[in-house]
Image (cartoon, rainbow, N blue to C red):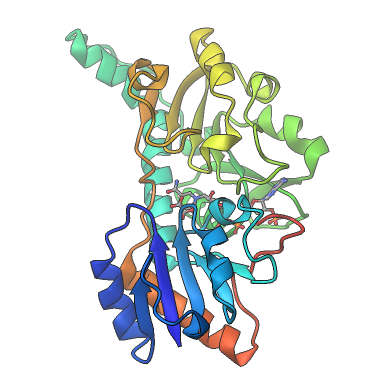
Length: 309
Ligand code: NDP
Ligand code: OXD
């Protein structure tokens, strides 16, 4: 059995080492090397390589190197009969929880105000809210949204979440379906986007939905750049309706040097690092997926092409 590692801008050496340990019997090739085409059964993909996988007649699964699979599904000329699997990786989840907690606490404790004050040597006390007085909305209550909700709950925040299907989660006010989106947003004083990018969620953070949020609220987008209509956010920031935004993902990555987000005083930009997929935690997950696919067992993270995630 051989596995192709086709991942853009990801140094392969640590992956070869970790995958070699988790899958001692596998032959691992780094794209464009692929050995004998008929021996390739699995592909690990990050970037625009799904269409290239048509050349492998015995391919059994295309695995994303991350939680998102938009980079695979957008390639409609990929081998459509081959299942697509996302990673449900404990290390990735921990990284996302850390990033979300850090940024929620930064806004909750008004750190951007103090950062601005320090620039002018201003000693000004500001009002403080308790976590229970702060209602936080999470768009997407999947693997990562739920892990963030649990962590924020432990700090005592007042939580609401929005998903496609109905949910009941202890201490989280659950909304589902398109018709509840605006009521959900109208209560989210910090909004965290943890949706997958699909035709239904593309551009979901736009003029109308940002306007539905309370005046002076905050946005943290860690889903995908395609969720956000960038000009609409700039307008909402410039009018003061949205107080500040932390953006980890962008329509164009790397974010172009002349993009206004880089220099906007109320925008924090990070270069798609909310969580990196780490070889040491992901390799055992990948080995488990391969074992399950080969045994014909249920595979966690199997994508339903009909819903797009
Ligand atoms: P999951 O598939 O586990 O969860 C997705 C959630 O979004 C589910 O709750 C789902 O609802 C909800 N959802 C999907 N479509 C809709 C819709 N049309 N309307 C309402 N809710 C919807 O994904 P993960 O939690 O693992 O990951 C989420 C995303 O986070 C990834 O797709 C990726 O884009 C992003 N990500 C970003 C990273 C970064 O470094 N910036 C790192 C890792 C992930 P339901 O539960 O009803 O199915
Ligand atoms: C992911 C990501 O989807 O890092 O895992 O964006």
